[in-house]
Amino acid sequence: MIIINVLSPIPRLALVLIVAAIMLLTGVLSARAENDPVTGTADTVYQTDVVASLNPEGLMFILGGFRRWSGPLDREYGIPSSSNKLGFALGVSPAYAKASAYDEWQPAIFAQIRFQFDVYRFFGANGALLSFPGADSKFGKNEVDELSGREETGWGRRVLLQPVFTAKAGPVIIRNTTDLAYYWFNGRGPYFLEWEYDTLLKDGDLLMNNRTAFLMAAGKGSRSDTLLAGPFYEFTHGSDADITRHRTGVQVYWTRPEPIGSFNKPRVYAQVGVNLHDRNRDSEAFLGAGLGFDF
Image (cartoon, rainbow, N blue to C red; front, top):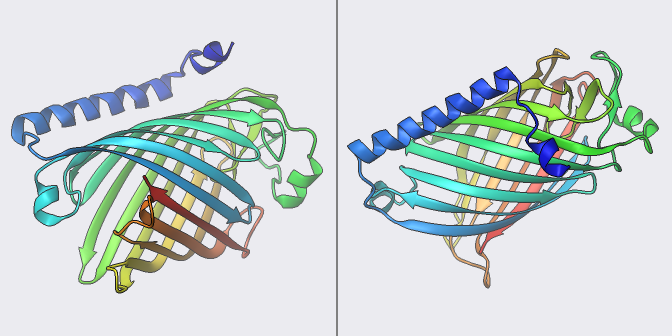
């Protein structure tokens, strides 16, 4: 039964996205093999992270890993300016579990693209999986609390295409990330609450999210710690319900190259901001934070 749910027929738009991504990745890798043979290194990394958020509230534990093939520029400049990753991630929250597989290709220091497939298992508790009758339905904290006990167990799937572009202007690092995602859900519907982007989606729905961050090195510690901080702007749009959210804030990222015990590359990251335009949380603050290690 699980296999049937996961592999049920794919709508035409999603199939086009999948085929385009596969062709892009295949063509890109072939071009790299012809024009710039990989003479660098290959390594395997495992990671664990815990992330939490407020407004909306959320908590997730993530375990994952990837195999990375790096070109010679990595050694020359000390940063991954050319690489390809094949990876996986498993996440568990009180509301649902998520399994992911991805391919992330970085042809140059300023560009990367990720193709990812996710499978969700909703536990039927703590707000997932919740259905709403219409595109104009409210789905804020009060509405979700009132629907407690009406959650469904079920499955969801997502195809994600994520291009990322990075530039530098003096000391400022400019990073733009776009998420193009196509979702499937099985449940009552017709609209479902999607927790990651806090919006309503249909079974077979397209979502776009775009984030631009302006980061500067805020300082280095005695152990060559890296601390980046700066403002960001983000908008999210759900296609069928025609819901758009705008928000802005400040994000911070810290990491250390030296291990702490058996944990490599410890990291802490956070963002805090305000919803500029949001159906349920207009002018309200939000917070997200996480910490993790490689091993």
